[in-house]
Image: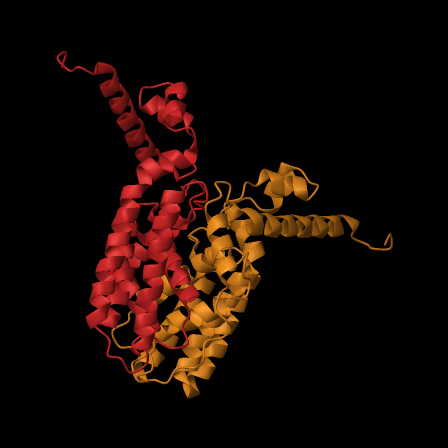
Length: 223
Length: 223
């Protein structure tokens, strides 16, 4: 490594990567408002180095969250393509796939709902995602497969409700959310549009009871 | 009041009532696992008096929760009567009314899901409530108005999901849950059974955004 002509620059890049990795981990574990000092500590660096690389929390968000947000935008765009031939599949696939991301990655719904006024790159990506969701929903209603009396705001409630339900049941039944998503999606289907079978078996009684018991533990961490 | 022949007994009854009132308030604000010592303080009494009246947390639960649990049982029984002539109305009214209790009284879902092994009176009431829900659900399926591929465990998920959604949106839109309950209930309806109009308007964009912002406040209290 001593033959590198720019050893200092390499240190800088390595430090930056360590900070991004530590921030990603902290945001996943403690949410996007996680304190910054432990991030510097976890990266093995001082606060001064952290602030030199990322003078604001928003700049750290941009470094960590742009890639996952871009993935959501890619998903929306795939669903819009699908929607052109099958409007219900376009809308429902987006809801199902975002539920699946939520289940794998705690804090996904926070990614989609945080105030990004200080992070314009993320804000622009999220506006594009939201435009895509509007398009999926409007196409579904225009084709008569999404009920005409539902509104776009109901989709926001749908997605947050799914996120909360995954948080409640995810630990005891990691894959059970799919069946629940199918059930609530059928509430959004226009009447008369044929349903598809619910995915997966219902929860067992002991899973319901364990999820309820975990819900009341005072120490339950916010996802 | 000095003509009362049993002044000591009256003190005892008054102390007990103060403890029950303080406990009700603490359980509402901090959940059913709220620490007991502040309850004695709030009642203006010592710990010794609290423990003389209520030697266990479960005995305090019985004193505070028997009445609301009995009200839920009364509700189930009214819905079972309704179910005999209109099975969908019986099932849906129970879900809607419990959502309405949840919205008025934070912690209702905790009332329905806490482990009452040490509180046999409450346990018996809840078993009776659960039997009633089973009856409502089975009658709906037998009549072909509740979808045949739904299971009783899905109703437990439905109710917890509604509770979490009310917790997320209740502060910014206290009455909006009714529309959401209608939407998810339609997911439980058998195909081909006519729907009723959704109650109330959809959320406004600013309500969705405010609910999302509140959701991420690190200090958000557990309901």
